[in-house]
Length: 122
Image (cartoon, rainbow, N blue to C red; front, side, top):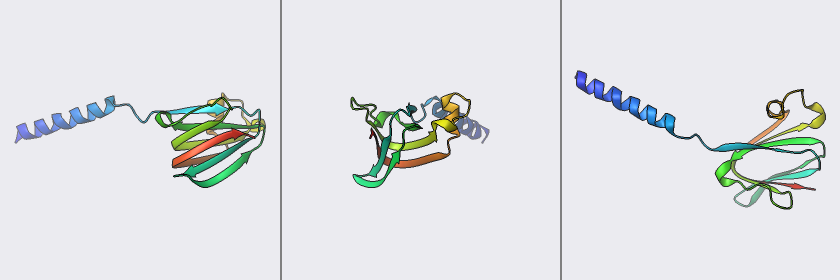
């Protein structure tokens, strides 16, 4: 009985240890300058869900799945696929923090799963 419990405990520990060694979902964040107005379009399976005009002077950050995203193209177009988080903040509202910290406090945050996002200059 003790041997069975001991073997079970060792196996459970080895499974937990193996899981800790695995990389988490590879995600990255890109910060998009507020130098021009942009259009953000979100679709799923080719069907448009929404489109938003983002005025000049608005900082954007996008957190995305690294393996499924393409950025930027030569025409300053960004594309993201999969699970995406978009944050927006007027440049004039940015607190005196580094950009990464400031964007975590942005007044607008949109998260979507299984989508295609395109951000293009207007």
